[in-house]
Image 1: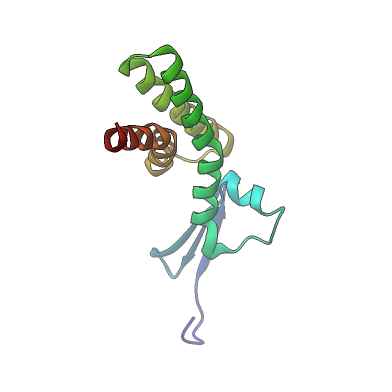
Image 2 (image 1 turned 90 degrees about the horizontal axis):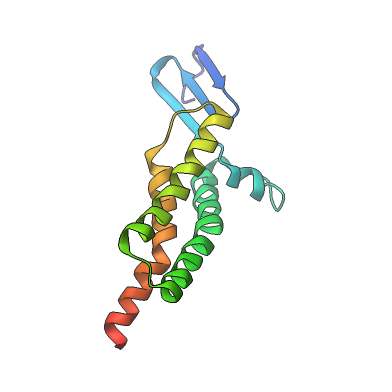
Amino acid sequence: FSTTDPRKVAISYNGAVLRIYADSVDNSHIFEFSPGAVAFNYFSPIEATHLREYKILWYAIIFLPLGSLILCNQQIMKSNIWLISGAVLLPSLIMEIILVSVSGRDIIGENVLISIMFTAGPLALYRICRYFYD
């Protein structure tokens, strides 16, 4: 705080999200603790400034291999676009639903989009490389 005046501070924590309010609801700070933050805590202490990076790394570790497996399956079985779309979307939604049910927080669209991006990434990279090198 920039002054020494008395402050009203409220803290709320539901197991997944820490909210800190200072003087009013408008002046709040929200920290989302993803499974990534917990996992990376085994390697180094958690820093609040890196919570977003922990989340992105966690989703990359989970969904990049899944996207690679979908790519391999597509090459072997020549799957149609609807099956591939379902294989990209469904795991992302299932993961978010599991996290919502465990933590009690609301669905966060950003998390779904990050997981879709990492799952579809290998497929898109393959298509781009194929376009330029075939």
